[in-house]
Image 1: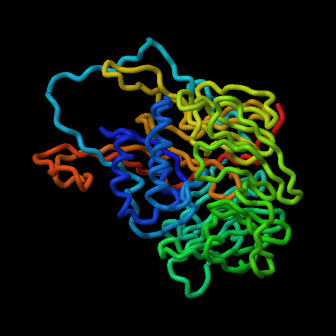
Image 2: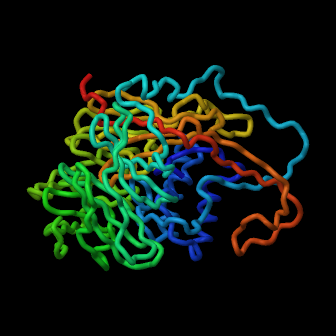
Image 3: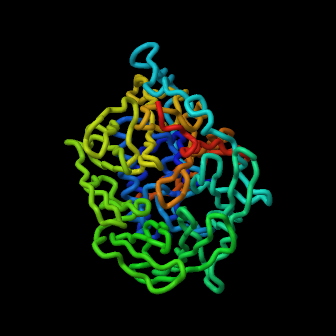
Length: 496
């Protein structure tokens, strides 16, 4: 996987409920999950109905139980685990097909002739915001894979260069105007610490900070690093253990690294080094983007935000979700929410409840909607009807997802469907809401099948051993890996 990928591909013969049950059975023996696992599970193109929206949230909840890690809004699990085995191969989903009769299968027919999906009218981001869309290489000059983090300006992108899966070795800046790249800093990690992985980074006015952990060791330990925004040699600020090391988000002020922890509460440590200090009055708060914090954590998939706090002044702004709204999240001006379990449509409104609007054809992503500058990121409905078996029929010409700018009301499609129900996109891995969305237009979904012994297929430990032969199919992504198409939110004008 490259980046925090939210992709899609058909799953043959299994529903999300089956996946949830299988994951639950594996909970006791599953190793620490890596950052992109939920994004990988969402690689199946999420059908835009209430049933499938609820299933995605159920899968997210099960994964959180399995890993005991932190589920986060912008990349799922923040603790990168590196080379070790994970619960499932994130780039492929296998399913068994029971042989059926040789009779003719029903021919899919739309419920209404000529019906188009609501998302079919969404124009691509390159047409809506041409100055904000560009191509960048997917690999560094020495072949390391890039993982986009966030944008530094309208033309500069901050990237992590990884020598192996999730093993970042340096930070680079790519300029989309000059098509040049510059090394910002090496990210070697502390000497003598085994199993170390750089985690989320964040950008301040003068500095870039990040933290690292040893996620596969079971230790409650983390350290923090800083480098000038102009580049240079990275310097370790300090180390923490215990609850203080259960880092959920990180940021930087003029003189301190700041972070929030899983259970709520915000700490800081001087950039010059020193003892960590808990910021008073932050019980239950989670860092959004310095100096702002909220009362919802990134495991709170269905909890609505009720306040936004300025940590410099400790001024609190009340947030009131409209009746029936769940997973209500606010940036600095705009909020997004979705209906209850019976209605997953997206609603946008200002923090004071004014300028409310419903966004037809868009569906919430379970608390991962809010990006930098209060942009929203949503799934798009591609359903045009049902076939004779009651299965949904999708229009694969619709975009994989959509970006919404509440300041201008503009909507743009992102990602590219491969015409087979597959397609995907990534979002930057910064701790603060990211300003980068990207995808690989050359990736495609492929499906391969073979006849195997039914007893060789994975199954719950308490399930009976099947006999005979069965058809096993694997849906995976292949191709691509040369360049990304990137949408830089900092390059989008905020006027009509």
